[in-house]
Image 1 (cartoon, rainbow, N blue to C red):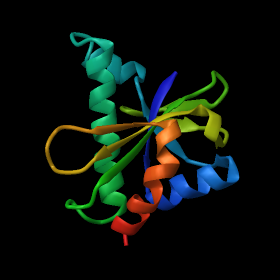
Image 2 (image 1 turned 180 degrees about the vertical axis):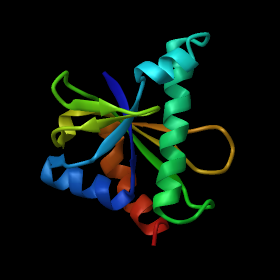
Image 3 (image 1 turned 45 degrees about the horizontal axis):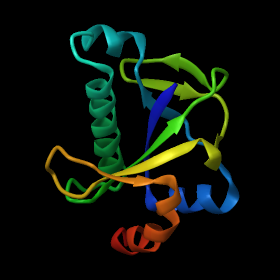
Length: 132
């Protein structure tokens, strides 16, 4: 299952260095989210979820002007637990090998810049610097 993690650059750094990181929840296509958005295709639902994660990342930084950081991950069937409207509880740590991409909301526009997992280490020092 594809899921989107609202993260801080420091969490990305820790995940990259340690190989795993314990997140409590992830934005995913829950039953309720699917029912509310059944008229749109999967790509649009995933975009909406990634925007919600970027907004939560900004809230974690307590700044609407901050960049929103999101990791797109592939969950295993045993990692997701209880669901709420937009999120699933994560029952185990996320491994770096599950990271597909980083998505960054660099402005308040409804757009995200995509970075492949192989590009994250290259850009991480910049993200860590911009976040201080």
